Image (cartoon, rainbow, N blue to C red; front, side):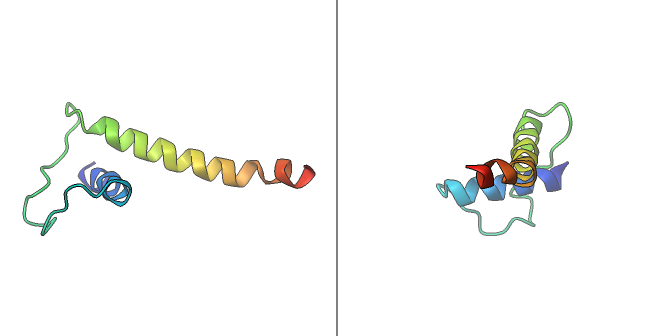
Length: 66
């Protein structure tokens, strides 16, 4: 789960680079567990990624018909 949080955090840093860290491997980002609130960020990241994938796969024909 912590690796998935790192993915979501990196996407957020691409969109809004307010704070950057010198090294992600030395404990700068604490580990994520299930009763943690950061699990919601991971869920939003994967839902957004999967929805973009679904739109790109299933809605190509709609744009061709227009």
